[in-house]
Length: 382
Image 1: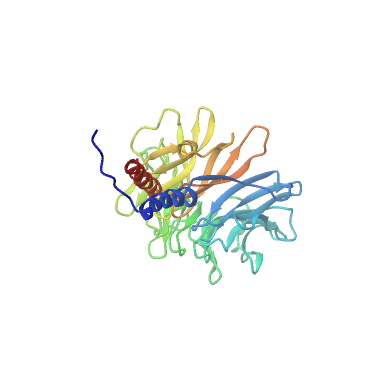
Image 2: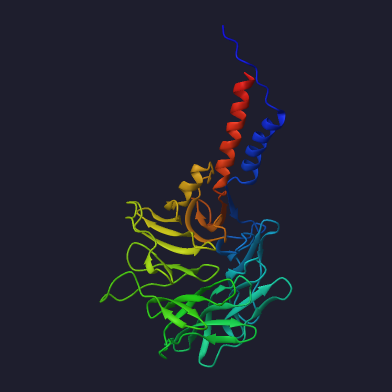
């Protein structure tokens, strides 16, 4: 019998393999949690946005008293932030700054349906009075630095809606005019890190607005004479990439170099009729939203590497148990593309918001390295 030379591996090598696996599995594992609680009074939660750093979720909750804007984080859980006096009980948080400290949304007050901004120190306060001729407003987004709010303001007769931005220096400012002087009908939905690039829809087309260029209409994926039907719903942090729904089976992606084009060129899987994006990561390499399928709506994620996938399938491959919950939509995603929020349903339960965390791509590599180290050590130990 041939004797195999005995090779001794230092304990530090074995420990390194175990440490890589333990750290990857504990600190980087995928997770699924419901956004709920509130002392048993809550009957419904729906997240609308997550902060760029992934720490804070905002949206709407419902109790027997009515509908209320909420702020959620892992440390303090779910909190309603009230509304303004003088109106019916109603508020909804539409968006949140990059660090989660400033929230913007809509509420009722003695002035009617108004936009609000909220932070821990000053609480909820109404934005400045609307310009003459406008009576109501809807918030679309807030810049990552919390300085700029964008949205849509409406005239009393409903014949005019202007995209706008607001900040504490300028107050409300309409951005509804094209470079040739034409006033458009539309609204703003999102803005970049510092509020310098604003996106939305006007005259049936997605638009990009900057101070230097004004409002630029982006067109649609369909060719004339069909009327355009696109709207920009998300913009990258640097303002260079825009995504949103458009006519046809694919949403669009736009940048100044390549212009407007389909987000994906391949045919949709047979189980998906259409995909509507609602949020994008900081560089727009991850897009989330909802797909319309033969069985209803389903949360979906698109990445440059993996294409279009159901979020439940992605989580299942990572060993996440959804406990019977159906993910109906993904409404937003953090800047790094790893934390996603949306709402889910389950038979016998009220609809609830959820938050999922997907580990970094490198996590799997760390686990494989760790397993390889341990396996090698074990073989030679035998």
